[in-house]
Amino acid sequence: MASLLNRILPREASFFDIFGALAENVHASAKAFIELLEEFNDVPARVGLIKEYEHKGDDMTHTLMTRLNQTFITPMDREDIHALASAIDDVVDLIDASASRLVLYRVDTVRPGVVELARKLGEATAEVVAAVGMLEKQDQVLQHCIEINRLENECDRICRTLIAQLFEEEKDPVQIIKWKEIIETMETATDKCEDVANVLESVVLKSG
Amino acid sequence: MASLLNRILPREASFFDIFGALAENVHASAKAFIELLEEFNDVPARVGLIKEYEHKGDDMTHTLMTRLNQTFITPMDREDIHALASAIDDVVDLIDASASRLVLYRVDTVRPGVVELARKLGEATAEVVAAVGMLEKQDQVLQHCIEINRLENECDRICRTLIAQLFEEEKDPVQIIKWKEIIETMETATDKCEDVANVLESVVLKSG
Amino acid sequence: MASLLNRILPREASFFDIFGALAENVHASAKAFIELLEEFNDVPARVGLIKEYEHKGDDMTHTLMTRLNQTFITPMDREDIHALASAIDDVVDLIDASASRLVLYRVDTVRPGVVELARKLGEATAEVVAAVGMLEKQDQVLQHCIEINRLENECDRICRTLIAQLFEEEKDPVQIIKWKEIIETMETATDKCEDVANVLESVVLKSG
Image 1 (tube, helix red, strand yellow):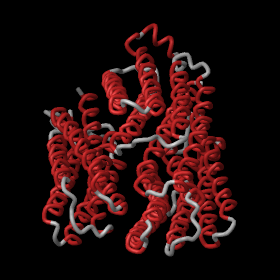
Image 2 (cartoon, rainbow over the protein chains, first blue to last red; image 1 turned 90 degrees about the vertical axis):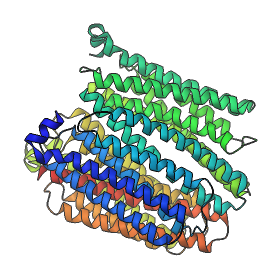
Image 3 (cartoon, helix red, strand yellow; image 1 turned 120 degrees about the horizontal axis):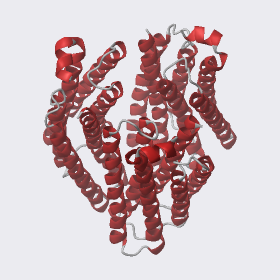
């Protein structure tokens, strides 16, 4: 039905284009975040770049919501469009929140294991791009959602290991406060990828 | 109206059965959590048992949501079914999060007062079972909701006392970080019991 | 349409009155919170006053929700009424949570900069009053929403500066734990003002 709507009503069809651009933007921010942690030079500039992705995400989400409010016929349920856009936007917000804390807390070295967590998050955002890209044809969306869930479980496991190590190895309570929050913020970003998967799954099952 | 639907459409009727099972599962996890804190032996095994309740809750919630997406006529508003299932699932998630932190943070003794908070949470989950069990006949649901709200207020009071004591008595900042989070996670579990009560109240008032 | 409904159906019309009272109540709590931080005497009594605003907000929200459940025709979408009331209620909850932590954590002096953050929050709640007050006629609501967003950005900036200073200047980890949470709770209150603005914007655009 969605692709029929596309031919008849190109204005509504572009909901899918906007969702695609939102997902690409999230994945670009995840890649910039991985590079930031890997290189760990020019930190403020790299964090600023991630902030730009966050602003871009906000702008696109706003455009989508405005269009949603002005459109009678939509290719998906109105509340699903809203939930999907919010969930995707939350991912980039949390990547930005993780990155900006590196500057805010004047972090000078990245703890071991944190890059691995970021890379796993990057795998999840790549799956978000794939799943959202197939939303219009509704082909293989569920397989990508399963993969997002699997990656979220892995991130959860890595995060727990990092937190346990942090409490065992780090003696400075201030460092514990800072890194506990950075790691947990990253983990929440992967939770939000799972929220994206849940909305997508619900959309596909409804129309199936 | 709900019980009429039950006789005509047994498939939809079992929404109530699934809700009942979800509520029982939450209460079972609360009881396992109280025992864990009371005995405080075999901690990893006991925490693993609570994790199983969490997984079981996830599975049942998923079954419910799938059925919801495939069903035209439901005994309650679709969004209320969704909100109720999510709120019940949040309770067991937070009980699991509280329990698993005992292992993650390598806690070796339980602070005084924490068992009392867990018991009060257990009273709240017992009321959730009672309220959800009466949802189909809509009899006395509101009385149980009032009781859940009362218990949540008590938990809030206990939690505040525990946090104040923690800051007064505990000199090690790392212990403060660990226990502050465990206590607050438990308190959030009781907040979610209140969310369950709010959805139930709204359902009953709408149909009244 | 809303003002026509007011003349025909005064019972429904008073949704706007209740929203106005909810917004005024939030702003009153913000003013009491600013005074508390400025004077910093009679702390428990002043915190108790803010707790009363929180209870009053709860009661009014409950009245609104009950009426919503019993009313067929509403001047705005049901889900928007719900979202708006929840968002407004969240603001006073978080002001209360910020204030009560001053007692809970036995704070004896207010850190520099925190009063400025509270005043900015007070500017945002004043804009919430203005925006909600114009909801019925839908005049200039969007301008006030833009102002709320601007103030939220300023609060975000102030909050980040305060957190950075806290980690640089404060050597006691326990003080860092306490103040980090108070400052972040205040910042979340301004986030919730932005949520109010987002709901209002959505309502106005839909009916435009």
